[in-house]
Image 1 (tube, rainbow, N blue to C red):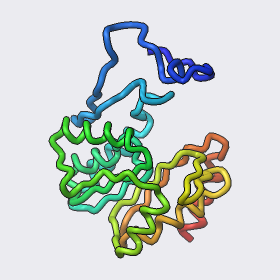
Image 2 (tube, rainbow, N blue to C red):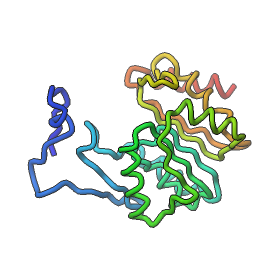
Image 3 (tube, rainbow, N blue to C red):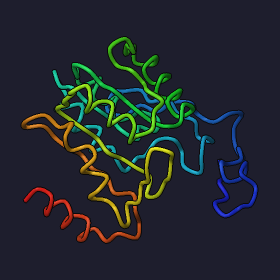
Image 4 (cartoon, helix red, strand yellow):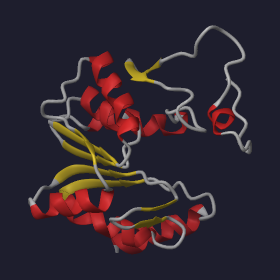
Length: 200
């Protein structure tokens, strides 16, 4: 598949098949199968650079309650389920992305009964979970660098702390809050300093 990033044609941005009869629809990493849609977006629906986080989740999620926000195609939640998480809730505003997460569940025989895939706005869902008094051992925030919805605004360049503070009350005692910075324009040292300030 060749993707033409700056093409005015959205189909070319998602990619054209130039070899083979059809693109692969899954990949296996650390023994876990992940569904793919290589022409879903400009990306490949699965990020290789977060493989170490998926491995960490599989190693540390046993018996834990996990919330994965901005879940996209749900690979973090699937990794946590492979690590015997007690419950995984995955949320994303785009149902089309979560259908790929559902295929991943099916490939690995994960149940959705106690592990819902929720089509929901981050701000509204977080508020709902706070109202319910929910706490999670692991909360993952993996937002786009910029987005605006009826519920709120994501701006990883100017409002990273605000976004993190929305989810912080959902982290249980001794829990983990995992934040991924997708803003290319924010230097790593500045982002790390922001996290350090929050911790202090």
